[in-house]
Image 1: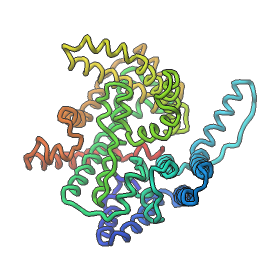
Image 2 (image 1 turned 120 degrees about the vertical axis):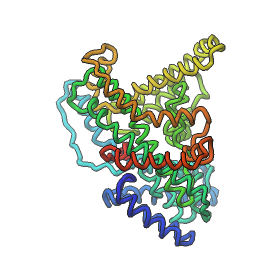
Image 3 (image 1 turned 180 degrees about the horizontal axis):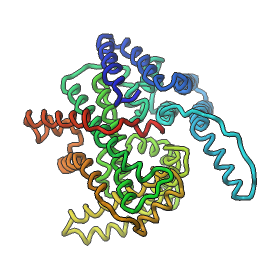
Image 4 (image 1 turned 30 degrees about the vertical axis):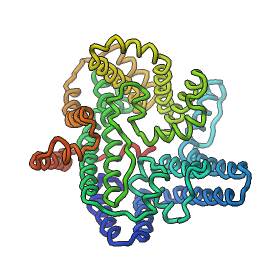
Length: 481
């Protein structure tokens, strides 16, 4: 069931809201667990089996961890329970998402060595969003093991924290330490919170339906398997995908956060104007923040973080980004994308002293230096999205060559059409960047644009564009991860 489907907007969500607000707190939690199961099973009821298995395993193991502490058992016992949780979670994820990828990679590697072998290819259907709920459930067990979180005693409360449908399919990845307290305590509805939720939903639908979906034809023209684009088509396609992936994913996040607010929940911010980043580290503090912080806390820091030598820090960055790339999909272009971001993170860290010296020369022109850094990081990000979206390594090589050695008729008219589509986003985000107000709703409702006619006109225009000028409906990109 898609957020941008009539089934969700006109049937599922209204029914859920009506029943939810008619129930007491305990009834609300039980009902939301059941509604979330219905929401997730709408793709395929079989997808519920690994989801419920993962959630049930981590719930039981968390209780075993607490029991081990009460009994005064040695830490090694608790460590084995935690390792069992990690093994089961990653084993399930690995089977569904990576089994065929690694099997095919082994076959390809063997052929390079002159070995003519084959491995059985299983017909595995990837459950929707298995990467998201696996990371979320696994972090809960790790936090309990570390003593940073007390295990949840209620089966229904824990299941709701993991299964809650707004964040279940594509995040943001919610930490149990943030979401569980909201699940456990009664939730009260406030007018301002509801209004902000509706604003978030409208802005999210606008980014997804009007901008992201309308950019699809230019992205497909460049990246379609077997296509032979010229340089202008590649540039247009890469720029279109740069904004498509952002509007698609951040649009989903805004809708999810808005829906959650209609029920009294508050989700963490997942995007902070990422295309205004000034360097690679800054980009990952702004893009998919819930995943970036998860990788930092559960992978980068346990590896040693930046506590060791410069070489060890660079190694930790590269391992983290390689695995972060592989998390996005079982294909070598995702691994290459992770390597690319790891590489520019490492190079930025090594070049930091030189960059600071260059910045000192721009002390009289700080705005120019800031603009240069933003523009440079944006171009590097765009090339990273080429790696991310490409359908093969051969396509990456071909497109990179076209960017370095321009070819073709150079028809830039499509690029103008892309810029027209993203112009409203650029305008709003420029105002957000200048004012520091990241909430679009507050920008219109309580910020500088206080006039009611202006607000109503803005909402009406967005609604009209979504309803009558939206692109061909597409599923959300991160559903596949």
